[in-house]
Each structure stands twice: as structure tokens, then as C-alpha cells.
Length: 548
Ligand code: SF4
Image (tube, rainbow, N blue to C red; front, side):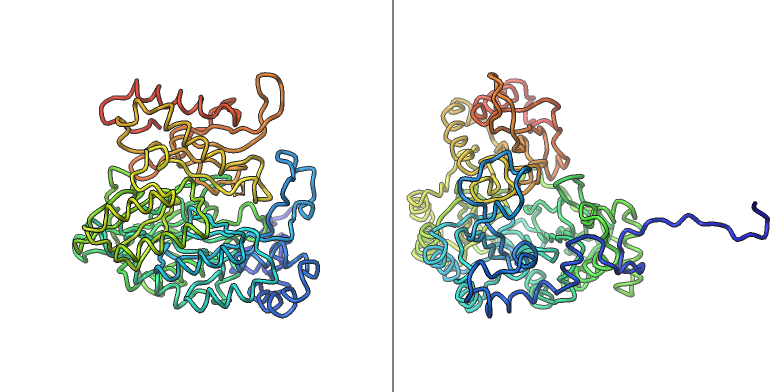
């Protein structure tokens, strides 16, 4: 029976695990692991115990959890079959070797750092090295016994693997040509360096609900639309050059384009605002369900207005300046080729295929750059490499040396447009092979489409993923290929891809459409891409880019 005086029953909403609302209990196994021991503490155990007692001594919670905070993942056992991983326990896929990610904020390296990365690869990683689409270098075949020496040598050279993975601020993407490009709105480099100096390795920012990806650029060349937080160069009519703040972008499941908060942030305030957003995410981010923990879910639920309000009132203690949206450049940039810098020198971009290089290649690039009078190299978010500060008289010689190293400095649009994630060779989540497939595809397309290559002014991007995750940003490619097992014409289960068509960034920002039933076997990939590209070229209007 109810009466007017009886207290009203309010329906208890299930918490999302937000610390700021009092939900402190760990609500999933990852949160439990982080609460049991801060992941940054694992380094001491690696140095003092595991490196001496070997792989078998590693605690499983460290191995499959906390190691990530230092860029370490177990790699896939060679020969473990694709497509049937669902029937295997994770530990059955573990090799005793590791993938190691070295974070390189902004992809910025001196030639001596690049040489060191090459030497470490040759000494400890069987000459393996991949340039990732987050401007990192990723090694394979790393032994736990070698980690103390690897860290000592990296750190002596000013490099680090700190929070290269894990629920923490990952490497900061930034323009590979920051500070030298003649058309950038503003140089992002001081802001990137200041965030690194002030916050990298801060334990209070290294237990976030989920991974946290940052992009800062004055040139819109870092896929800012799909980052958790991004600062995009913009000219304010009264205050001059600064940054437009975006939050909540991300790929994988439930992909979202980031939202503008409508603010203008001067460069010297970027670190403070970055820290404010990061703390807001730490405190209000969802920790109950892992698949809803990225900041994009909070931004979607709150909206840009509330997000900005909480940021200003609870974290910055002041209001931000309103600001305009940045102008969108007409063409995406990959920095391949020779381009004049502000100071009259040139930067020279070259294209390995899908980021695959080797220790020997890195050493070769460092020497070639130095011979050409340069001391600086950059890795790009398109898995490419750029040598900076090259005098005009040295450009042709450098390009020819890069060509000899297998890094095409005048690459075809197909070589420029293809990206691939790690795939089944080393990744435990993979279903299909990607790196070799990308290499074959580039050679195939260069031959098949030679007759129309001159007419392709903007490379058509083809991104290959080894599984439904989106490490190679398939939803933002003209042709995105998501690895899965498919049925061929003879009824066999074989490696193949689900196709997404018409994704893009910049002017065309939006996600590719998954075409229902549109799947292609790995063996038929060349035929398929040729067909799609020829149809586009035959039917396009003048100046039209790949259709959305
Ligand atoms: Fe591994 Fe999948 Fe990421 Fe590729 S997309 S690296 S297969 S998790």
C-alpha cells in the first residue's frame, strides 16, 4: 500500500564504476589487477627477479597485464594456426618472446637515437623492427633476460618504453614536420615536450580506465579525429595561432569521430589542459565494463557542453577561451617525397611497405641522413619515415641511398597508400596474415594498375587489419580490410577480409561503410582492389576523391 507520506522509491541506477561518483570497487579483472598492484611497479620485478630467473618465473598477472605499461606483450607462438584462436586459452598462444614497443613521441629521433634503435634490433630482436602507425618502433623476439640492458641503453639515449601500452597515456602523435613545415599553423613540438617532461610516468595518471591516445599537430597530419584527446592548430582571429581541443575519438568497436569543445588553447596552456582532461577521464571514466571504458563513451553520454563545463569548473578552475574550428586541408599528407622547409632546406619522406623495416635499415637510414648533412629523422602515423634538414644539393643523393635501402623516396601511390597492422606473424589476437599480404598487394597493384597510376593524384588508402580491432585504422581508409576467416568458392574456410569502403579523414572525415556480405579471400585481394579502383577511376567526376 502506498500513501502520500510514504518515502518515494527511487530506482537505483547501476553505477558505471566512476571513481568520482564513489564507485571505487574494482568491477572487472583488469581493474582488480591495477588495484592489487600499481602497474608501474612491475619494472622493479622485471629487473630484480624475472630477468634473472627467466620466463617461467613471471607471475601471470604481470605477464598478461602489467607488462604492458612498459611496452611488453608476449608474442604469438610461431605456427599457431589462424582463425581458431577462440578455442585456445590465451596462455596456449604465449611465446616466451616479447613484442616491445619503444615510444617515440612525435616520431622525433636524432640520427644517433635511430642508430641505437637499429643496433638494439640487431643485438636483441633478431633484426626485427616495424614502424607502427603511432610513430613507435616495435621489436619482436625480445627475451625478458635482456630487458634491463635494453632499458639502460634506451634511457641513456633519452628514449623510453614507459606507458607505451596499458591503461595510460600512450605515445603522443605529433606532426613529423612540426617546426619546419612552411604551411603549419603552429609548431606543436614545445607542447609535446612539456607534456612528456611534466607527466610521463606520473603514477597518478597511469591508472586510467582504458588506453588514452593523444594527438597534437599544427598541420592535421596525425589522424586527430580518432584520438581520445587532440589539439589541432587553429588561427584565432584575435589571439593568433593556438589549438582547437577535441575529445572522444576512437576506433575498434563503436568507432567515433572526436568532438570539438569549441575552445582555443594557447600553446603554453596545452600541457595543463591535457592534464585536466586526463584527470577528468581518470575520475569520471567508466570502469565497470571494459568495452565501455574508453573516453568516447563518456563524451557520447555527456556531450561536448557538459564535458567542457566539468573540465573548466572541476579541473582547471577557470573558463577556456572560445575558439573557431580549424580549416580542413584539401589533401591528406603523408610527407613522402622532397619538400621545402621554412629555412630553405628540404625534408625527404620515404615509404617502407606497411612500416616493415629492420635494424639494418634503421642503421642505414641514420648513416645516409648524416652523409646528407642531417641529424634528425621522424617516423610518421602513416608508417613512413622522413629525414629532415637536408640541403638542396643533397636531396637526390639521399633519395637514391634510401631507394637502395628499400625505402622508396618516390613511391607509387599504392606503396604510399597501403598500411598494415602486425597480424598473425606475431599478434596473439590476429586471425590473418597482414604484413606479407601488404607487400604482395603493393607489388601486385603496381603491376596491374600501371596504366592508370599517373592519374591517381591522391594515394588511395588500403589498410589491412589482422582481426576486428583497428590497429591499422581500417574504418578511416578508402578501402579498409578487416581480417577474418571466409569461405572460398570451393567451400573451404580460408584467410580473408571483411571490406569497409569509403572511410576518410580531413575533408571526408567519416567511417567506411561495412558492406554486408562483402568479403574477399586473401588470395583474391589483388583482383578485388584492382576492380574497385578501376571502377572508381572510370566513373569519377573531375577532381573527385574516393567516394564515401
Ligand atoms: Fe593484432 Fe588485431 Fe591489432 Fe592487428 S588489429 S595488431 S591483429 S590486435
